[in-house]
Length: 153
Ligand code: CMP
Image 1 (cartoon, rainbow, N blue to C red):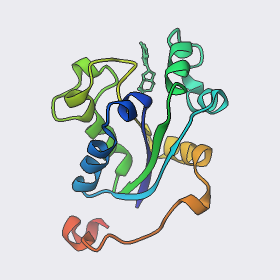
Image 2 (cartoon, protein in one colour):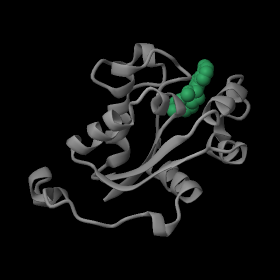
Image 3 (cartoon, rainbow, N blue to C red):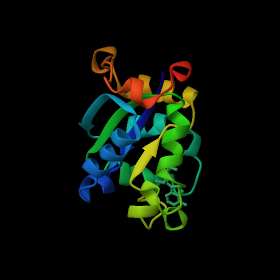
């Protein structure tokens, strides 16, 4: 099973959307394998968003992401990274498709509620930044036979 990292950004925590966001992934059929609330630090943000470091919005992004706690999660499933990316919608939340998390709940490009790993490679890097082995739980959803065909698992 593929693993992907999701963050409920400070705006999502402040707006009381943690439960709604978890609910969407749970009912979709993904499996939660880790969950924690934490404060992002400047050092983590520098590593996390290293590919955005030269962008004009980087200082504002850093200040936003360190302003209040975030909730970090790991979700598992077949092709979990692409499934989750589709469910969150595009960065520019005002233009995000209705039915996506950003499309339904956000109107900003910066305050777009949620982060999700871009790829399996990105997920592995993000996992190593935020989670220890002991924080990753391995368990079976008992509804697995009702979520996937045998040849898909
Ligand atoms: P995300 O696409 O998850 O990752 C990069 C983040 O930077 C993005 O969400 C926004 O939160 C923020 N971001 C991207 N573009 C802009 C922008 N033009 N202005 C402000 N923030 C931005």
